[in-house]
Length: 111
Length: 114
Image (cartoon, rainbow over all chains, first blue to last red; front, side):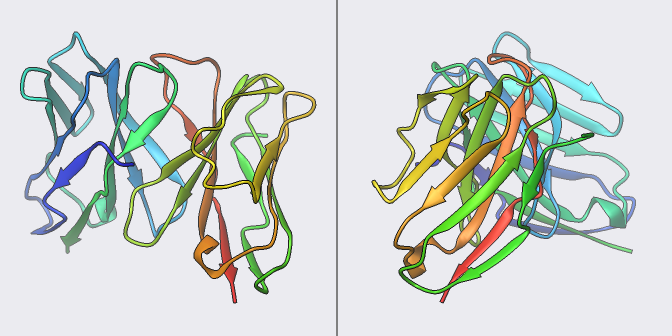
């Protein structure tokens, strides 16, 4: 079963614009992670935010976490055509090892 | 190796056949996971190994699916009597420990059952 739900399902923007993707989940978590996937194959880890953290930055990425609303957002600033990919949020819950993924957001950055 | 290696990258098999998918995790990683991803969906958990033992196989869909990791490194996912509904990308991941750590994914094996 999938816990995270990303919103929107698809997003198309112009190069240089910012992209914001949201994720909602249902149960308590230890951490929430964002992954990127190109062409339906391997996933690449982008950022991990722990349940006691509210915001985290990594390069052009900014992730926020609101545990009271059970939601997270991923912001990609100054997007590039190479950012075109599917982005997934994944929650790590009580089991402390199993990742539960959402269905993903397909981001298209037009040059 | 530098990353998680999965072989084969693509596998086409006939309905009813047996298949084995291999995963070679990052050296030293004790935790190994198998996920399955259908078209348009996110990955779904199948099984988790800590060392040689399957610590959680609750995601395996039925008894046609089995996975082993006999020496605590390479893992093999085995599917018996394949069905067309088994067609998906099978992803393997490893991590140095469980808990607040990222998982490193392989490129996956795309299984097509015809």
